[in-house]
Length: 487
Length: 96
Image (spheres, each protein chain N blue to C red):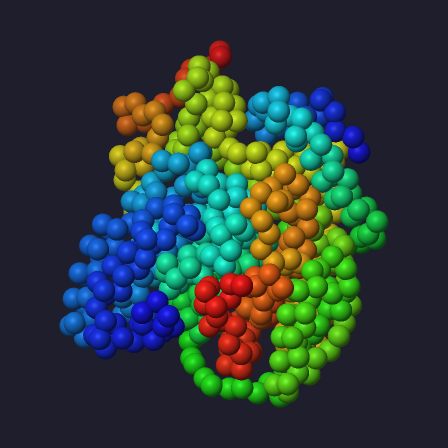
């Protein structure tokens, strides 16, 4: 069961060759057996899952057609609200917070007959690239447990890579789905901004955040994307009226597809093992008949500064809601209202969260607003225009996800600039609101997975997924298990 | 730019945060390095470029203006750190 694709498992469940209980209990046993190694799960929702098992099995037995992933277990990043189930953002601030409502994506999954079996580890409030900053401890990379799983959706990628769950949901504000997928050898999609509802996603940077699927291959991701995408009256920025229509095919050729290759992404600051593996993916596209067109990506050195200014500005505003009064942590020492605010926030947030709130406060403050925040918004406009021009020439752009493979736990945690620079290839996609898929494309000299990303024009998921599928139809990296990948 | 104690205290006030001494030392160095790196945006010519705060131009998908059920008060109050008489409770707010 653990080596099947999710769609195959789903078919066995629909055909009643595997019961929903067997699938759910099988994965719960696996989580209980391996979670001390990976620390990918923060909460295991055993009882909630087992209650749902009976209901969903009865529906399948009565011939009800719920969805193509009906009866399949799934786990959710712990910044996505689950009614009655703790949603902590891996923060002391929310360590006892139990939402009273489901995020729209969770409602959609449950209506589709999927079974939520737990909540996944992450960087505190999704602020980080290594899943080391949360209060529940570090998530370990299943390919090498001394290394990070990436972040901020590290638990979501590690749980899939470690075969603890067939599918998961993550969120991506500046690369938080794609980078952990690259580090853990999994496949993930950061959808177009507005393709998936953000209702119930605990906000970090509202103009950049998107929820997306993580799985072992693009078909499973696409199936999950078809369930979570589409409009939502509770999110006015969710502009996509229709859900993604899932279909499979066995195409292996890419004639007529124009692939942009930003040559300046490969000149400096990238590990040779990453460069080699990504270039081998480019060769595969060429062999499939795609036209590879090199170009110089504009604004490369301005992407990380613009992203962090905007993300921190939005974060400083979004996190002002944590006041110690309505929900979340409240300091026991506070005697006055000002002290409630000050002490609850100072004791409830970790260092990286404080760093970003203060950066955000700085760039929005009087005297610095024009030089930082306004300038970053203008850079964003230039970047968006640049992407608009590029997508008149290309169907997709191919690029690395991260300049390195998974690094050692603790290696970068005290060097925020180094950590931020690790986002250089991913953040521009969020600034422009574009969709991108992260796909495994080989291993470096240490046997660690390397991922590349395909970036598409806004709302071009159908084309993006089709091209990603052709790549995976021709390659086998997505089927390489942790034991085979490890040296 | 240089980050000094005065600026750190100002940012603590704006952020409603009070840093411990070791955090202050860490963040002073970090913020200086990060802000100096961010300042490279100044090189970029952005004259006559409008600001873009959102990835797309048409951002709002409006719903019909209909009354819908809201959440149950008691359920919401279960997450309140301190609750009193069906309300969120805070220390005295006036004349503090």
